[in-house]
Image (cartoon, rainbow, N blue to C red):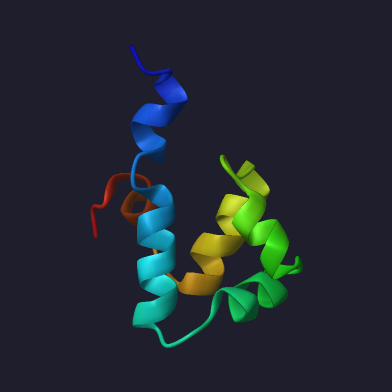
Length: 71
């Protein structure tokens, strides 16, 4: 059985990356605007709440969308 944290993580990074590209931005752009490097962005498996909040804010999307795919 999967760990509970993986239940909501499933697809999280796909939605983050899809949103970055949909907005015509790059991973580097988003990482820099959030205050960390692109390699840091790529290195997160499970982002901390502050990092997750920065990503939601910078991408102007809800946490529900990134977590669960609900717009």
